[in-house]
Image 1 (cartoon, rainbow, N blue to C red):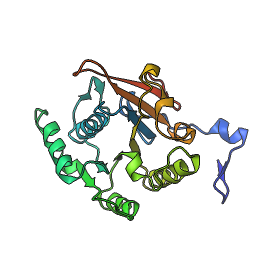
Image 2 (image 1 turned 60 degrees about the horizontal axis):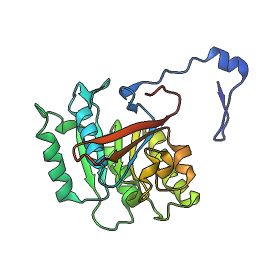
Image 3 (image 1 turned 90 degrees about the vertical axis):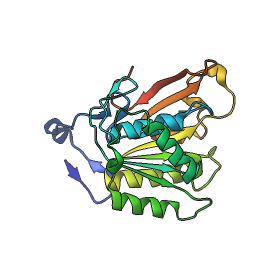
Image 4 (image 1 turned 180 degrees about the horizontal axis):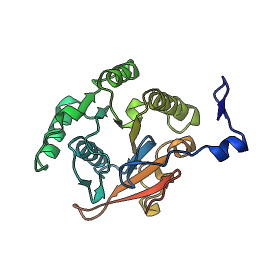
Length: 234
């Protein structure tokens, strides 16, 4: 395979015939493909942050499964980035989840970073922690607060965010998990990616997309994988 000095790879038919791509591997079977840029989006009140944090802690703790999905690469290093609730609530959530494991041994693999108020150096600090901790997977909760421009209805502002994530993803070879909101209302449309806040650029950028919603049963949530580039999903 020949690569020129631009941002494009030039691949001839002969090169493609002789090149065997690496098969997609999963951190969690079906749910989290390794090395993908993924989005978990949902309604307010669907507990998507708890879902994501429990998922990450399950990986870090070396659990066998998460919500019935087999963890195929347990014990990876997880960086969980909060931009929403602050240090106190973040640590409370950590303890609530930790106390439900039979045994918690994942502290060495699980690092949390909480954004304090309005900060212009968020991305600088995030990159610094990635260099120091060298995580395998990064959770960013949530996209709106991490975006440099809050008007996510415009593709140009989505590109600013996705370019920063892609840069981290490519430079450090990490799996990225972005937590994101639905627009208000629209419940009659069910679990549709069109309900996500933001322009179409986000849907096109995401390589794996999972949606979650609350229901009228307090203890029941529904989630659905709606997109996965190059992998099968139920």
